[in-house]
Length: 90
Image (tube, rainbow, N blue to C red; front, side, top):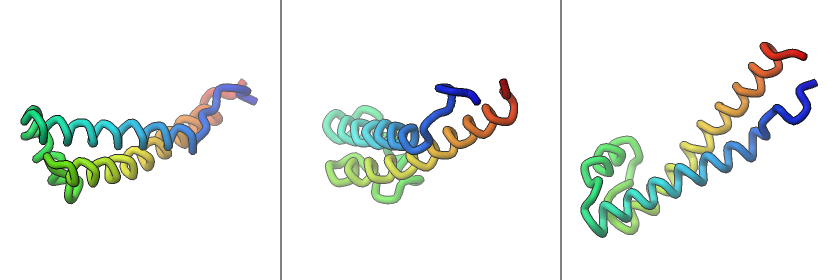
């Protein structure tokens, strides 16, 4: 059944978590060092407590981003596999 088409839920979740965590880290550092995207960081900081345009704020954002990305990636991969099994039976 569907050999090779299913996603590994944990691997996908880890990849999404790392990608989003690193993205928030870079955005925080760029806002801190160059001032670019400071408004975006301020807006994101209203959702991710402690995230801000500083070294510590970007590290906190990285942790929040990993958690958020992991959960979103887990749900996405699980739903993908669920619908693949239900809708695409071969």
